[in-house]
Amino acid sequence: DADVTQTPRNRITKTGKRIMLECSQTKGHDRMYWYRQDPGLGLQLIYYSFDVKDINKGEISDGYSVSRQAQAKFSLSLESAIPNQTALYFCATSTATGAGYTFGSGTRLTVV
Amino acid sequence: DAKTTQPNSMESNEEEPVHLPCNHSTISGTDYIHWYRQLPSQGPEYVIHGLTSNVNNRMASLAIAEDRKSSTLILHRATLRDAAVYYCILPRDNYGQNFVFGPGTRLSVLP
Picture 1 (cartoon, rainbow over the protein chains, first blue to last red):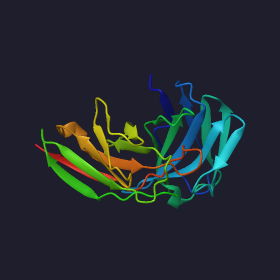
Picture 2: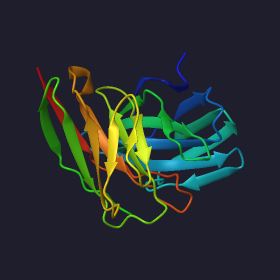
Picture 3: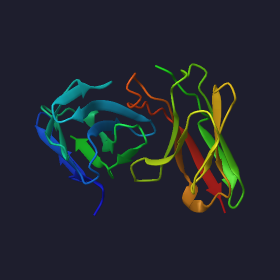
Picture 4: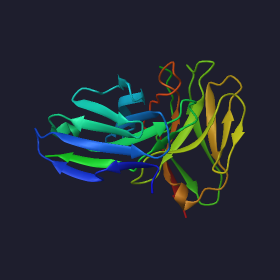
């Protein structure tokens, strides 16, 4: 099993719908992150969480919300999806020492 | 935020060494330099990181300039599986954790 699992892998949704992307990890890491990647571009940080009670906005949090249900679970929600949120979404985890991130395989989201 | 500058793309022949440069002239004294790579259709994966000294691991070597304003990721013998986007990253904030992933360098490896 993968250390960081994202579900679903692919999703097509309609404009205005609410959608949740889920991330779970078996690394035992405290810190979790959600990134967005647009074609040909780098990754932009949406939200991050350093522990269950700590949630922080990243560079592009507008239109998104998150929930840290447990140390191992971090969900990203689009309350009302719009077409320009079509992108590849990655969840990542890290330790507190900054030794490195572990990324999931990504969720490809298409909003039509 | 400290920023990095990398070439958009590079090419290498298979089994030859590859030197991927990165400039980070505004780096602070305590920032680690991290390198990740993203293979096609996958999430980024950790390659190597360092602070001041040159670093080696099974994947690559990291050469850091004495003034720390630049670094070079070295793949000693490129294989076709090394074709990927390589990101040179500095921490975004004082926690030394949040990373800014720029466009990176797209490495093509020719057989």
